Image (cartoon, rainbow, N blue to C red; front, side):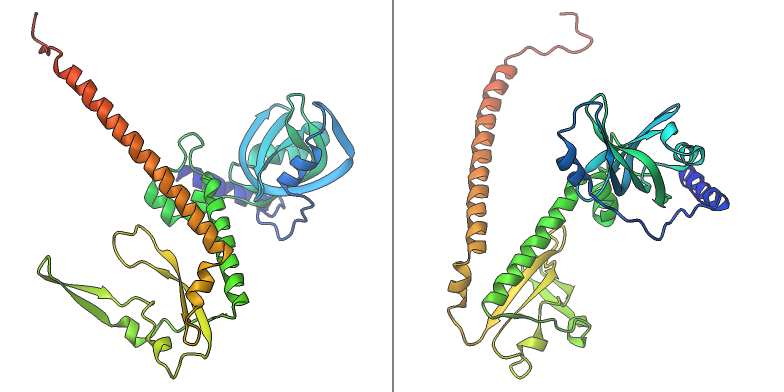
Length: 324
């Protein structure tokens, strides 16, 4: 809480000095990965003075030593270091860098490209600007974000603390995009149906025989009576992609693709022949093979554990108060 109050006070102080802590515009010329790929060949200590680049991203680390400061900037593509020297910046900018820039802030920086003596490719900063002042501190660098509940509820924090999580969402988006392209090539159209219907708001009472009890559920949105009525369904083939969470056994929602085609009974065979489905089937085979390896290792560990326990059982046990 105290850290947040300090950052709020810095926002007010920046505004009092004539700086806007939430900028309206910044033109970026390159991403971090583009710079890493284009200038990785530079020798240690070499600088490309004739090249001027502009980059933006979130500050995830900072170190200041007198007239020198190093910041690590992360964008969607990766990370790059900002090399900030007092002689290359105005006094006001360097003081602003040391006083007002915190980890978590989003900065824009421009300058030349330089590789430090230690071989770290950096942007030799000639000008920078605070684009977004962060009011809340990021999770601890060393302990990270380990609270599973918080990771699910605050995905934006999870993706900052664990960048690999964002890759999962990118891969999922590509998978869904490829599925849509494939279904369109087969003549399907994607439809959306109303969710806020009286039918979906009704309670669903289920009699559980094993427990001899009655349980009340909500009617799931996938019960699409609206589309299943013959006179309302559009002609030809159609599909929908939605979210579903049918039981407590699933920790989170998952996506479902449902396909209907009244006039083409061979549609399943067509879909099974798709390269995308074949890739998924091959991936499933790899997973099953990996699962078999895990089970085999588990069996070996169990056997070794039993043998070790047989040896341990023969060890003599003494109490703390025993003299022999």
